[in-house]
Figure (cartoon, rainbow, N blue to C red):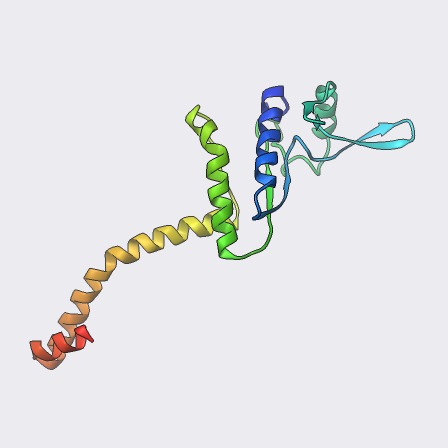
Amino acid sequence: HAFDTASLEMADQWTRELAISPSVLNVIGPNNAPVLVPGHDGFSVRRFVERGAVAPDAEVLAERVLDDPLWLGDLISADAHVGVIVVQPSDNEPRTDLSMNETFDRVLEPYRAQGFSYHIRGAGPGTISAGRALASSTSALIPVMIVVISTFLFALTRSWQQTLLTMVT
């Protein structure tokens, strides 16, 4: 459940660790997102984790956000079993995406070792995965490309000396 004490404490720890990264501008999760609740003077802003501790009335806050369209589908699933932590990068540079991806791995690794699973979504992680896959497949194709080009040059020139000279330069 996204609002049990252990989940909120875990989310609070992550958001604090992610927030100190220079590549991160802002981090919002179920633990620190504002919850508007009626108060004596209108509305007051509350959070599930206040001053480092889970709010004693977290169940009341959970009931409130389960009816809030700003929370459902963005920060929590409709059944409140899945919570989302939204990380805003400091800029849109590729090195920032790489740094954020490394920060995610560092922060989540202890929990992955315990058997938890996480799904990182967004443009940055997707770009990094695609870039790594492209670099891997490209390096595997280079020898094949050399053979194909050499064969093509040999077929055109009928001279292995000319083909070799062209391929070396």
